[in-house]
Image 1: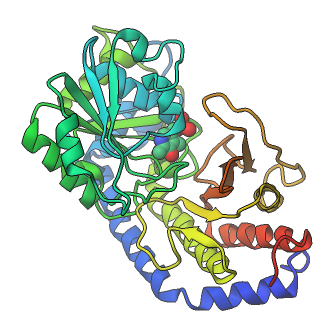
Image 2 (image 1 turned 90 degrees about the vertical axis):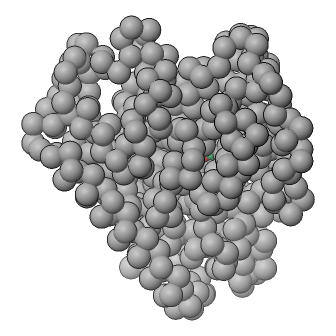
Image 3 (image 1 turned 30 degrees about the vertical axis):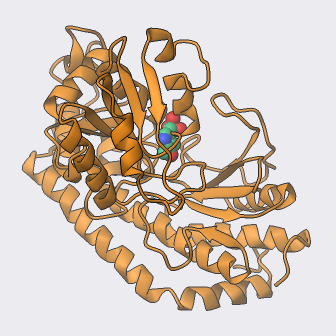
Length: 421
Ligand SMILES: *Cc1c(COP(=O)(O)O)cnc(C)c1O
């Protein structure tokens, strides 16, 4: 089958050799998935999930028992008091914007103690001028960089916590940067340091790509809110749209009033027939996340073996599903993405090209042949066309497909003489 699908003997042999060394890593990933599967299952049982919860509602969506069950299942799984999980949250950025806008008022300040946030959030906050940003509402922003070794700059953070600081945003995943991804434990240390100085500030974690990678989420280490997208890990590949905010009752209530309207809050929002996908997706999410993690570990080992700098390295522990490979040239970045696209189940016949995406500073190339448009729990690769030409990829609904996509990327590099085996 591999040769029929255009994989050469060379790439196949190298892949099989790489995979043989990974059995112990894979076993650990399966153990985490096993634990998380039980976590989700237990929440579903506790909330007496039943067929009636799958019914579609329309209009206002008052008394939507499916939606209420879904939200309580998220809250119980992520060990929070409350949750807002909705198809009306259009994406991760929207969920994060709701959390930010609901928590601050004019004159307040937001602090990021872990360097610059994800590109799209920079426009929400107004770090890059943008219509409707928090900056336009008179909310200011301050950031403290991570130390060169990746640690927290505790003294810098102490100095940056002003009396106006109301909200702290902590991004777990590295996103499109070169820093490390933060473990839930280390996020917990950061939060207790901050709360030790200012117990009243709201600490939110951008948990995108982190869900189910570890047994515990940042909400179990003191975060007031964790926020993410349903077309990443927690949607399990089935959710067609949506975002979540899990956190304290107080924070989630504020978010609900911002998402719908003051006075309405969580009581409205028809489920539009999405409950089967959102619930079943969450049920599958732990094993789907495991497939994505195995794909990332496989790729890191394969490319590191070829002399590329990979991030995280082949042997490092992981706290999100993103893998970065420093490809060094724009040609390699384009070829890598071409290979991922050619290995996809959908749109395998098209060629990805760099473009100026809304919300991003540099042209970005994206490879994604997914069942859910733009889904990045499905195997997808992207990278901004800037030094050092890192490709960031993530996903793989199944490990066999993730592995194949990575093999295909290497095949494309090889066919264009951009790498030597
Ligand atoms: C994907 C992502 C976002 C934004 O999510 P979208 O669904 O693309 O809007 C925010 N932060 C991080 C770290 C992400 O990975």
